[in-house]
Length: 345
Image 1 (spheres, rainbow, N blue to C red):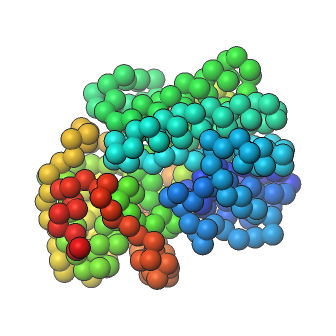
Image 2: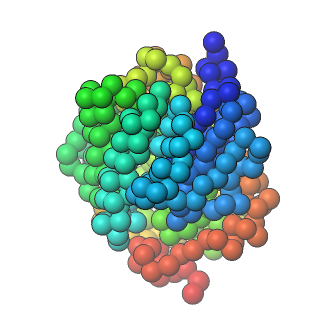
Image 3: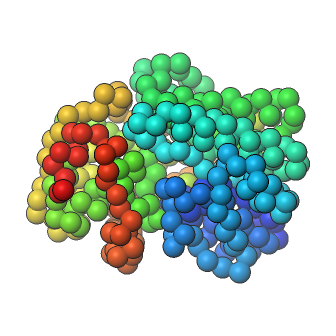
């Protein structure tokens, strides 16, 4: 059986399904003729207009720390759970560490408990390769390296989620897979004070603003197109070889932040250029590059999207949805002061 055929006629739960990765995953599962895709999201950082609409997609608004809401979605008896819901991400967790532990810690534990009780066949956990390896890991980042030298609550709780997954696998036999994402980008991610650099850069460029680079611009990241991540998740949910394992889902290519900024300015026609601001205290990684050899071996993962084309598609999504995006983008008091100081009031 092809891995995509596996999802036909299945009932699948996607927590965090209103987010960028979740909404794209929901679309893919719907188009693969799943019997029912349950999108479970509290809309704290996602938007209902961003959820893929189809007869086999059901949206339930609720939090993963709310037992009543969890009972509502698990009474549908999902066979597969993609757990993408999270309190995202580093700066947000620094500003609100208690909320971070409640959602990423207790929330993940609750979703695992309900999955185990309802005898879910597969549980795929969205972890963060950008977070859990710490600042001292050798490049390229490989799954066997683990670090206790973590610098934000978000990094700590994403690691905690992996440890809870390990417990449910070893103690209860719940078939879990831990996927570690790297710097996702693509259609579906609305910009904002706690979002990733690419949607924020595109938004500011389309506003005609200079793009703020926190550092020197020589810093690199492993940017991964959302379509490649979705393909990796579908593969992780199918292949038995992935059960109990952790694996990186990345592009395995380094992109300099200054090159990213210049590319976005060029493609959007933004003449405002760039502006250098102070590095954030928690941002201790000057380079990120993931090894994807394990994912290639276990699930046949092979990212396809060329970076420039991925940026083009993301900009097109911004243009096609500009009024909704502009209405939802928020840059409030929680954003790091170095960036906030030069944004329009």
